[in-house]
Each structure stands twice: as C-alpha cells, then as structure tokens.
Amino acid sequence: MSDTIAGPDGQLRCRWCAATPEYLAYHDDEWGRPVADDRRLFEKLCLEGFQSGLSWRTILAKRENFRRAFDGFDFDVVARYTERDVRRLLADEGIVRHRGKIEATIHNARQARAMVAAEGSLAAYFWRHEPRGAGGTASVSTSDESIALSKDLKRRGWKFVGPTTVYAFMQAMGLVNDHANACAWRVRVAAERRKFKRPGD
Image 1 (cartoon, rainbow, N blue to C red):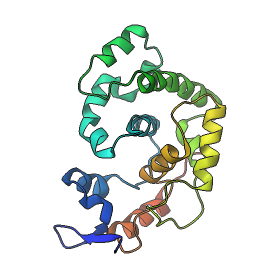
Image 2 (image 1 turned 90 degrees about the vertical axis):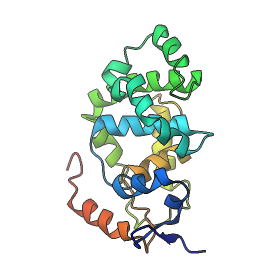
Image 3 (image 1 turned 180 degrees about the horizontal axis):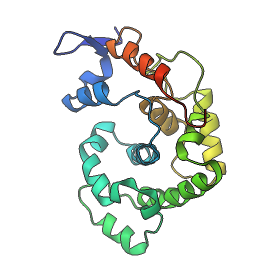
Image 4 (image 1 turned 180 degrees about the vertical axis):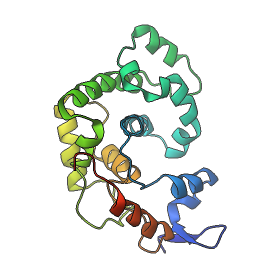
C-alpha cells in the first residue's frame, strides 16, 4: 500500500491524514513545520502526553478546550497551579480528565521554568536534539534521538515523556521531516526547515 493518498485538491499527502477530516488541515498547516515558540513546544509535549493510550483525533478535537483550561499552556502560569486547579481540571468535561496526566502537566510546567533558566529557552534545548537524517519514515514510532531526549527529560524530572511520545512531538514540531517522500508537503517543509533559524545558532 502506498504511504500517500490524493487529497480533495488532487495533491498527494501522507496517507494518515485521510483517517479523519480533522487531520487534513492539521497535516497541511501544522505537522512537521519547524517551531521555535516555547509555549507551542510546551503545549505540544503536554498534549502528546495526554494522548497516551488515546488517539490524536481525540486530543485534536479537544485542543481548544485544553488551551482554555490550561491558560494557553503558559507554563509560568501553569507552574503556579494548586490542588484547587487540579480539582477544577478533573471536573472539566472538555478535556481528558486523567489525574496523573493533569498533575504531570503542572509538574512539567515547573520543569519548563527550570529549563528556561538553565538553557535560555525550551526551543534552544529541544533543537539541540534535532536528528541529522533525512526523515520520511512516519511509520516509525521512536528514534535514537527520541530515546536520548526522553532519557534526558526524565533525568531532569519531566513526566509522561517516553520515547514514543517524544518522537511524535519531534515529528509534529518539525525537528524531523517525516512527510512521506511523495507527499507534496515534504518539499514545502524541507524548504521551511532550510530557512528556519535554529535557536541558539
């Protein structure tokens, strides 16, 4: 089976984006495009943690609810959440109400603040783990780099950051271009990555 499929405009896209209508815009507008914004990086890593055991479709459908519930994933704000906020979030039907994942998000916000103090920014830290290969293997769920990044995040105290979660984060945030070789967006993302100024460069 081909790893691409023709979209409504006739252009070839990664086959996975045909699974549900919500994936099309996500594939075209977001997935794989390089990101250097700390809040977006933090949000994505948190949402990937919430996805564990679920589908990305579920999380994507609730993403705006998550953003409202977690103050736009401003980690300086989330880091100050208390048990009262945990109870508020557990009562919020618009998000995934999993105590462990909610508490991990708050905990990770505190780790994010510590990382910014130590590294300058989340972006500077994450982009140091950019793989040097060509990508194009969206069916792969981990990589040597995601395993190393996962280990380092855990060493720093982060939670819900296993190698699979971290690799999905790297794919989505453009640290690797895993659009299929025949996907029309692979070339576009490659061009963006060439122009992208790596944080810390």
